[in-house]
Image 1 (tube, one colour):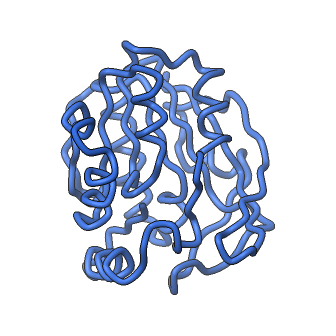
Image 2: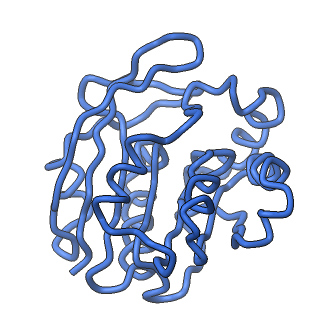
Length: 210
């Protein structure tokens, strides 16, 4: 689900997904309720082109297919994570575009997407250059008027996850990271309960591409 521009990032996440089942990972959600509610508020429908950045083994793709979306892309740095999702979906996986890449150096077509979804990737980018490249990728790939839905650890969230340092954001700080090409549209706070029972504070932020 997560990625970083660090040269060891791919090895780290392949190891994570290779040693634990998706349901054992701290960020696992049986149903991505908060993402789906916000996507519904954005008016996502069958013709919406959406990319799930760091989607990995997430069940969001299942829910989007259930909503009959026909233009779904899932990108993750870990091929193992993507394979978990493809195997779970069975024949339905052929309706999805799968991209194995680090988002900080991935090439995505200009204006290709209406919605950019990221739950828990951006907060792993602790380097200024990685964040700059991520924002540049989102700015290029989202059409004008498109929406970026970014979920990060909130200021009350953990300082580390999966053995890595993380950044924490409220919606205003995240909007500043994305700069003038994006406008803060809405945000909400949520508490994620990990499979082990820990509570993690998240902020969900919707930014509108100008």
